[in-house]
Amino acid sequence: MSMNTSHIMPTYARADVAFTRGEGARLYDDKGREYIDLLAGIGVVSLGHCHPHLVESVQKQAEKLWHVSNLFRIPEAEKAAARLCAMTFADVVFFNNSGAEAIEAAIKVARKHFAAAGEPQKNRIITFEGAFHGRTLGALAAGGNLNHMEGFGPHCPGFIQLPRDNLHAVETAITPQVAAILLEPIQGEGGIHAFSDEFLRGLRKLCDEHGILLIFDEIQCGMGRTGEMFACQHAGVWPDIMAIAKGLGGGFPVGACLATRKAASGMVPGTHGSTFGGNPLAMAAVNAVLDEMEKPEFLPMVRDTAEKLDLRLRELAETHCEVVLGLRGRGLMRGLHLHEAAPSAELVRLAREEGVIVCGASENVVRLLPPLTISADELHEGLARLDAALTKLGKAG
Image 1: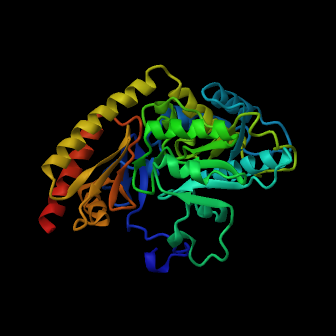
Image 2: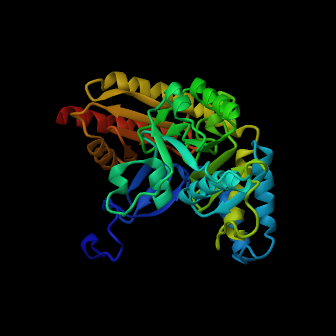
Image 3: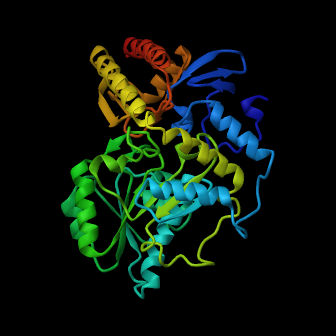
């Protein structure tokens, strides 16, 4: 079907490419052409395409039971929740279907915590410029991007947006009405901005001093993406509430809100729900992903791959200094910040022509989010193709 006659609502400016299969970090389109995937479905396909253990686990569950609803116990969800709590600060988990839903749950947990404690006036949440927390109305308001919010009616109230990395501004903004601080340890859509470890530690200290909650959005930067299971671990800081998704299901749509029992003290029966959240099929995917990520060699492998990526990106930035302003990010969540005269959208297009998949972000940044399992050969080949695309972009400028 022609893109002009598609019955899909046109909310994306889609590239005219249709992928039909994948293996590891390689994708193949409907014309048989092969690509190196340095995007992983925007950080989702954490174990690569068609990982054997993930495929087998979902297939086995599909033959037994797909869905029962949360009116009943779901043993697969209980197992996944226990595993996530064991590897983090959390005591309880709420499973849902996406990152935006995980953020909505996190906001509700924070506000309900104080309402249940007799302080309903504590309902405002501090967020930061450049944030992206999802496309639901509450998540849009938390992100504060006016371009994303335009045309959707009254903005959801209760959010205070501050400049990045300004701890004094945060301290000044904390009033008796503030319930929580929400941020991505590394902003993804906002241009691969990493908050400093010192800033994260400063936020934890402020929250403890003022008796408010710290919420981390690790939807894109979590699940091994930075070489630690969660990006906040680099700073030695845990939040009270955390939203995760993307790499959690390895490609299966699933998200989760993690919290301490204290932070979630207001979440009693009837306060929140999800028809599909935590169903057996999604939980089979989550448990399979955790099987792989909990192996002792997994995170060291990611860190080793990240070192190779960093070294090669530095070489590319130096070689193509007329195009690349600098590098951003951490681990396998990296950004090429381009000169204004070199549009990121054009590099994304040229890269695709060369057979490598990347995507853009704000501030003229091109994102690289390869599968965590990408082989050295796949990484080398993908970056060689990106090198060729950068050369073309430089000549065009």
